[in-house]
Every structure is written in C-alpha cells, then in structure tokens.
Image (cartoon, rainbow, N blue to C red; front, side, top):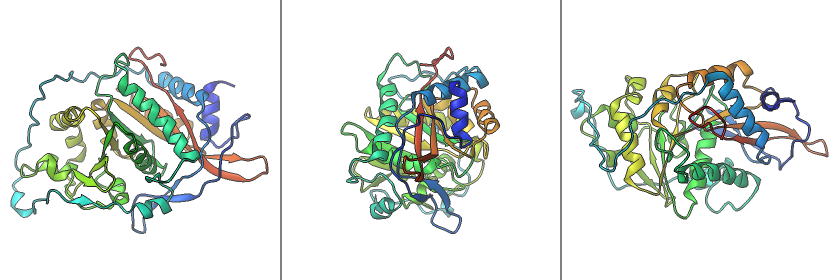
Length: 351
C-alpha cells in the first residue's frame, strides 16, 4: 500500500494496519461562544507517522508541481508600512485603548481540552511538541530555502469544521511555553473570528481595522495577554474588501514588519478554510510555513486535491491529520490526532 493510499485511507476513515493507539479523547467546541459553535476533536493523539508525512508531500507534489511564488527578499532596513488612505469614517470609530492586558480564561480553555500552561505532559501535548519542533527546526535552518520568513506560520484547512482553530490555539499556547520564543497569534477570519472568540477578544479592533483606517497604529491592535509570551491581534470589526486587504502591499509590508521586529517572535496566522473563502490563498504568498489541517473520515481525496490546487503557487510545509478514529486492543474507540508533517523544497522534492 503506497503512502498516498495510507494517508487517503485515513482521510476516509479506514483503519490502517499497524497504527499505534493512544489515550481516549473528548470532543470540544472549536471557537465561538454562541449557538453556532463548531465541533472539533481534541485530547488523545497517536504517535507521529512518517508515512503520513511522505503522503502529504507526495499528494502535494502530485497535484501542484509546487512552484513557490516569489516574495521580495527582506532587508535589514525595514521599509515603513504604507498606511491606506483614509476611508472618511475615522471620526466615527473610537480609538482603541493601549496597554490593557487581555485576560484569557485559562480555566475555560482547559475545560475544553486546550494545552494551557501548567497542564502537564500527556499524549496530546507530546504530539504538539513534535509539530512545533519541526516548525522551529525550519525557522532555524538557513538552508531550507523559504521564499518568505519561516517564522510566519499559517494554519488553514480545506473546509470549515475540521478543527483548524482548535489546532491554532493549541499550537500558539504550546509555542508560548518555549523558553526562548514569543508568539503573536493573528486572526485573519473577520467573518467567523473563532480565534478571537476563543481568546475572548471578539469585536475588538484588530487586523482589518489596522489595514482599513489611518487612525490606528500597530500597537493599537496587539493585545498582550496574561500568558506572558503570547500576544494576539484580533480579526477586528472592518468587513469590507477582506481578500483585497489580505493580498495588498500593505499586508505584505505588515507581515515583514511582524517577522523582523523581534528575533524571537513566531507569528501564527489562523486563516479561513481554503475552499470556503479566498482569504488564505491571498495571504499565503507572504507566509513562510503553511500547514493544512485535514479531518480523517470527512475530507475526501477530491476535496484535498482541490485545496492543494488552490495553494499551488506556494509551498505546503505539511498536513495535520486530526479526528483520527482508532480502536484500542480492548475494542474501545476514540477520536484523536495523527500528524503527518514534512515540507517540499523549492524544486518540488520532499525534504
């Protein structure tokens, strides 16, 4: 059985012989605090599968040919971020207050299965350790040949409800536990605002307000939090020309500014699903590492291939396969995570 067949078998819910089981997992809501909350699977995890990583790379290479789009190289002297022209409504908006600490409800996050500080080591935390080690290794490898800063990381998915934001939150919290790194989480989905809702910042001025208004500066939209090494940029309130703003020169300059301002910073972008909106494909050329969340038993071959075709102009760093249904020796079934992770070199060969 080929690596592609093994990955696709997991995507359609088939049991793969030899798979390693892990602990049980509960289901948790992904983002949102209203009646439209989406379901994401959390908790237990299976050990990292190298075969999955190979499948991720082979499927990506098979679909796209993977020619990474060129992003102008960065320079030591950062150019100023051009401010968009005034929309004429500046006086109608209250200026955001600086210096306030966003109090993330860690107890609530813990109850929903997130990797909050002090949780301790368990199967799921170990799996996120393995994912972030790969991301950090890419950042620290000057020979990796990324076309955009490797400390800019995008988390997206093919379709809604695949656990994308749950993954983004856990990865941000896990990275924030690093001794030598700080994390800035950016919500680019102004329609759903799941990342902002999860962290308790929905409705605050954020990314799209900054890109739309000339009376807001970058410090106005960065929320420091009660997690010492984690900051957040909410999606914001402005909802016009969303894709155009993500694809704009101002956004490209902003990503470079965020990547270069602090040497220890990792910027994690929680993006809308690729097949639901065009936001992720517009932003992708400016991001060094892109991880696609895939739901086992739901995401079909055609859906995944279509999503990869939409991202054919960039290099996919890896796939995160979640909601894997496993059966333990005693017959107990559970849902968990299995991670396949790898990347493509600029030539399209797996690395």
